[in-house]
Each structure stands twice: as structure tokens, then as C-alpha cells.
Length: 179
Ligand SMILES: [Zn+2]
Ligand SMILES: [Zn+2]
Image 1 (cartoon, helix red, strand yellow):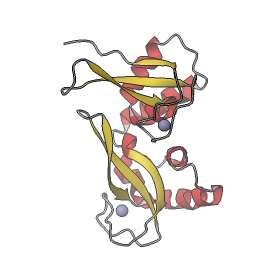
Image 2 (cartoon, helix red, strand yellow):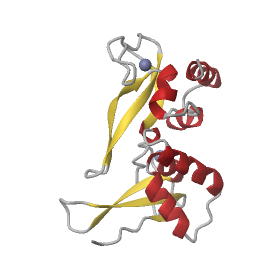
Image 3 (tube, protein in one colour):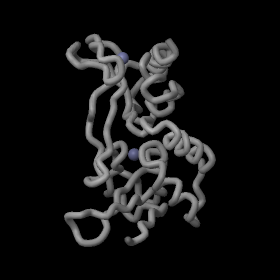
Image 4 (cartoon, protein in one colour):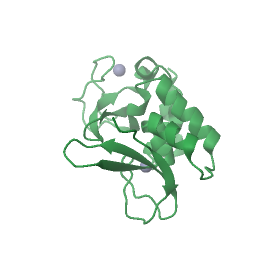
């Protein structure tokens, strides 16, 4: 068994996309390289993440890389706290933003009730260890977040993965999370 070493290093180009949010990682920005042993390819595959996306969605590789890197991470303390929260609440890495339900046909993964058309919903993704990919896996009501994730302190994560939400919209979601 080979030791898989995860790294934190500046992005060599601005071409790689983050596996966590799908956006490009700017050249020279520090990024997490999470190594994956791919059964279909000889050798290792590296999945790149923004540091925040890595701490939120791939906490174990993030913490290992952060412990061994020689790079200076600007908000290292906050990222470590968030990565540890992701380990403590094992469903938290599945959170992938929020939006309005475009139809009233999908059911909440927690309570199994329909998510009303136009209501806020939190997107859930599952990580596939073999493929190294996140796949869309449904939605939950904000009011179900506390039971589903084990915490309702998730507004920072919603804001991170849905950067187009307005402060007033985040307030609406926050009120539902706490209801
Ligand atoms: Zn990202
Ligand atoms: Zn629900």
C-alpha cells in the first residue's frame, strides 16, 4: 500500500477547475491537491480544490496537507475549524449551496415531504471515492438542516457555494435554518 500524500501548493496555471465548486482556481492561488489512486489509470490522479472548498468538502485530505505544508495559509485557523466540523458532522461535506425549488416535485431527503415550488432548498452532493467526483443527490429543506447535518450553522457554506445569493436572501435562509 502506497502512502497517498496530499499537498497544498500555488496553482501553476489558471486552468484547473476546483472539484468542490466547479470554478477555476486562479494562477498562484494556494490550492489543495487531493491525490486519488485511480483503478483505471496507472499511478495517481490529483484533484484540485480551492482551500475553502477542500476544507468544507474533503476535510481529511485538507487537514493532512495543511499539517505538512510549508506554505503560509492566510486563514488557516478558520479553515482548520471548518474542516474539523466537516469531520465531526459527516454529512456536512455534502452541502453544496442553496436555491429556490423550480418545481414542487422533489422531496426533502430528510423529512421526505415535497419541497414546495419557489421555496428555499439546500443542495446535497455525494462524493464518490473511486471516481473522485461529487454527484448531485437531491435537496433538503433549510428547516431540516439541523437534523440532517447535525448542525444548522451552515450559512457560511451556503454563501460560499452559492455566491450569487443576496444578503437578504441569506437572511431568509438563516431564519428557516433556525425555525
Ligand atoms: Zn472551489
Ligand atoms: Zn425536510
